[in-house]
Image (cartoon, rainbow, N blue to C red):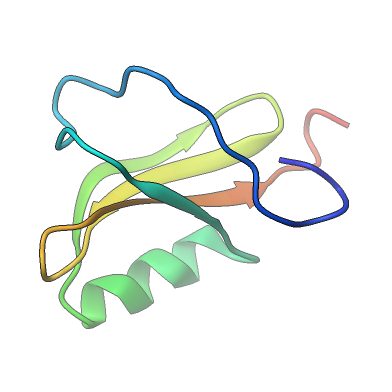
Length: 78
C-alpha cells in the first residue's frame, strides 16, 4: 500500500479457504464499518479482520461470488 494512492498489483497464493481466481483489494478508511456495510448488502465474510504490521485485512465474497479483500492502513507499523 503506497502513500500516493493508485492501483497496485501482485500475484500470490491465497489462503486455502478463499475462492481461487482473481480478486481485488480495496483500501478503506474503517475496516469494521466497511465489513458491516458489505454484509448488509449481502456479502459473506470468508476471513475475519486480520492484523499485520502496517495494515488490517479481511476477505469477503460479494453476492455474485466475487472475492474481495478490504484493507485498512494501520499506524502501528509507522
